[in-house]
Amino acid sequence: MVRTWFLLILLGLTTGCATFRLLQDKCPKHGIRLQPDEVPFSFGNIRTEPAYLEAKKKWFPDVADFAFGGCCPHYKDGPTKTLYFCSECRDAKRLWIASRMKSESAE
Image (cartoon, rainbow, N blue to C red; front, side):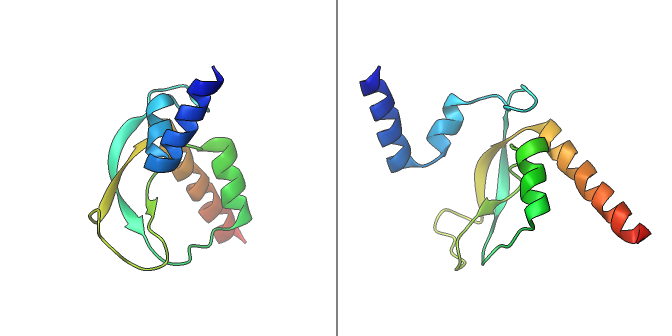
C-alpha cells in the first residue's frame, strides 16, 4: 500500500497534475464525470480576489476554463492545454459572476 502511494506521488511529481486528474474522474462537488476541453493559457501575474477563490473552492472547484501559463508567454506545448472540467461547475461560475455584476450595478 505504501509503495503504491509512493509510486503515485512520484508519477505525479514527474508528469504533473494530469496524472491525478486521470485518477479522479468525477467532480468532488457535483459528482458528475469530468469532460476534457481545450482551454487557452493565461500568462502573467494573475491576481484573483479572495471572494473568487473562496467561491471557486466552495461552488465550482472543477471549472477549468483556462490554464496558468506562467509569467512569460511561451507556446512550447501549443496555445491551448487539455484540462478536465465539470459542466455544473462552469454553470455555477457563470451564475456567481452574474450575481456579482448584478449586486455591483445596484450599488
